Image (cartoon, rainbow, N blue to C red; front, side):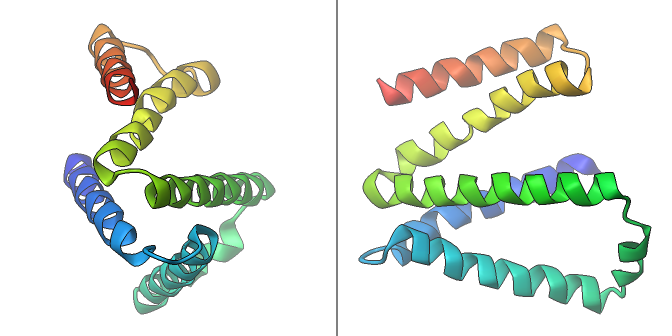
Length: 137
């Protein structure tokens, strides 16, 4: 079932790129990111509240909180740079290069999380990296 959610994520990421490109026309990319972030905040908390999932807050450990904060900072920086790239580049180039994050995630998961690197995963990462280089050059 994880793959279904991953496909939905990919679909909405694609729509995000298209809608963002239209939405940032003539707008400062940082302002556009801030506006988008408020909407995400409202939607995410709306889902948590509607599903009555706030009880998990008290179960958060210090480690959970620290790494969620760090992850939030990384996400914010990613969005800032993504919107700037979209503002000055073509969606058809920016979005695929942004997906280099997939290959980087594979490498980082092996280094920091000790996940196994299979030959299939390694080949997939190399293909993503190769495709990114082709798009950039």
